[in-house]
Length: 195
Image (cartoon, rainbow, N blue to C red; front, side, top):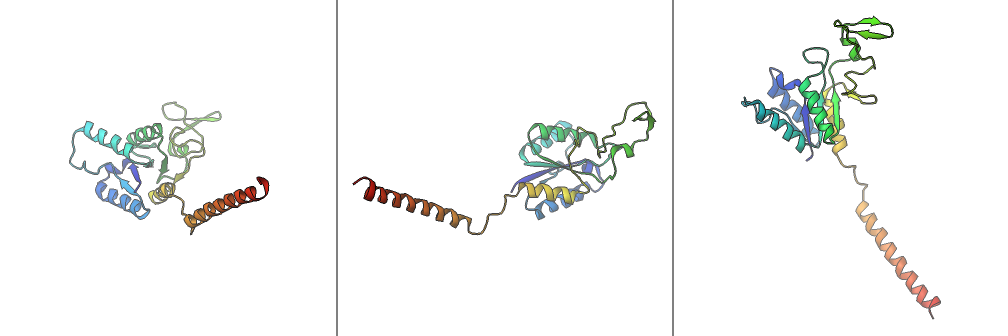
């Protein structure tokens, strides 16, 4: 079965293992395998091993589903952002979801500066109407409202299109018809053209 890497700050939850099992069950219900970053690392304390395992998991998975909900501030988890960038650099499709409604600008306290907005430190704040930074959710990127929808979309992407009933028989029929037509053309050519 194709596999999905389940990126996000869910690994920091107090019920992280249970949440990972829930997300993996959603994957299984969609006919794919879910890979949660904590799988096999619950007792691991070496940061390099944890990082290496996450990278290896991304490499082996076909797609990434990422929770880009705000985490410890108005933006997503930075580790998840890194994983998304890595996956995209490796050519892996990503499917995003966020529990936060509204755009990024609505989550940051700002003051107007002409037709722009600035945060409390005077820095410009993006106002592209997206739910996260444009490098994470570029124009046209769909951000699902929850993991159920994002996982379902990823699973649908990974499933091969259903074969039409009898498609194998139809192909064999076409081959047979082509062979019969070739034999008939050969016979007609021999009978009438090459006497």
